[in-house]
Length: 598
Image (cartoon, rainbow, N blue to C red):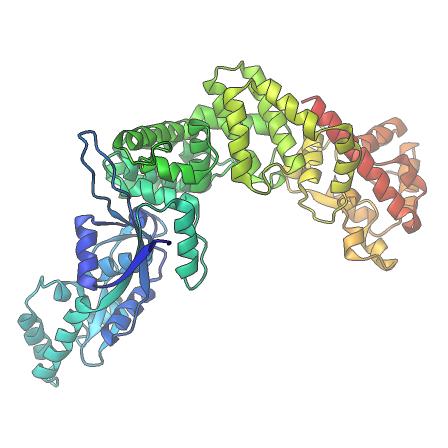
């Protein structure tokens, strides 16, 4: 017989607020931006006043952890759904500040009109209007005597009836006596079960990220410094995208700037490289997988709870060690030298721009590998070689495109226990056979998706080999990518459209090449046989029309660098399909050369 996995109860709003104030309910999002618009706070107050239901909140009771003295701690309730509503209640009723999207602490004051029984967000116009009470918080919390509020209001609004105003304000105060549903999940459930229950009972079918579970666990544990660690992760992720946010932290979070974390992330204020802009989930996943040699974040939730995987008990020592270990991983992730050295390795492999990287999972695991090999004292030259190869291999094979957690777990366990070079060689033997290079990779290039990962690897190879743009004498593909140059259709799009080719045909990635915009414009919609005839004439002393190449040998080298077959000299639309097949093969060969010389 299956036991009940959760309980459902109605609680008074004042009970929930009391639990928040005492810490009985931990609101993990309390240090993260409050995303609700102020008008939604107003609407919530109005719904409570009118007696309308405001939905359920969902809490997961932390498991009771066995302490060193043999006793058990009483687990807090961790709020996993309803943070915005509970935060809105504490903001409007208790008058607590919230963190806005700029991480500034602000008050959301809800005003009330007793005559019309309406709520509104306080604004300058309402503040001047005597019919409005500017803030409901002191009335509901009894910070001011109700009799004085009524007397003052009626003096300023003599047309009102004191008894009627008293009735209305008593109704306002009774908001805290209204009820809200609490679904409480059992503490002994594992994260997969909690996720499943969450999705089933959430009417919108909202996905619950395991990373959010972990961040909730961290933020709720002040004993082991989880709340500050959580801030560090959030702030690092925000600074990585918006360095100007540094001044906000310095001005509005005086407590955090006193911690050990603040100076360790301050280097980001001068960092504008967007190649690797990790979000909080990326930071968490990399730090965890690197330090714990595990790939499943559900394991981290259990470890932070103190779970002993053998005895299935929860022990304080395991929780303490897990928080300490996670902290070490985060500190290694945010370390300026580590981060910049890793980004330099990725860039030196040819991935010079963030648009060339479409797999955040591949990038994350490459950083995991970098940190792990550093920890294992590998030679820096080998670290660079293995990280580059692993990154390129994982993109080419789509290693982390499906079931990434399982793949992370499998790879990190092997890397943690084996020589990395040997394991990489085994993976290459299994996945990068001649059949892969000669057939599978060629087939992967049969796509019209401009952001194709394998085509991006080709562009990275061109950057790494310092190849020139199509028909460019000195400007490289790297220059064109970094300066947002044009992608040109070797068989011009308008030319093929005029011959009734479909979009999926003329937009094949094997028809793409980087070139200068003036070259692209000059070619227009001419057939290859036409404009290549002019290019050959130009290379033999004729009129300069396309780029700066004036030598036949230089032209042939440029075509080779861009994997353009010489058969294109005689091609019209009738040869397009043959051209596409031939160029895919040339691109695949170049990618193989690139990989094997990395």
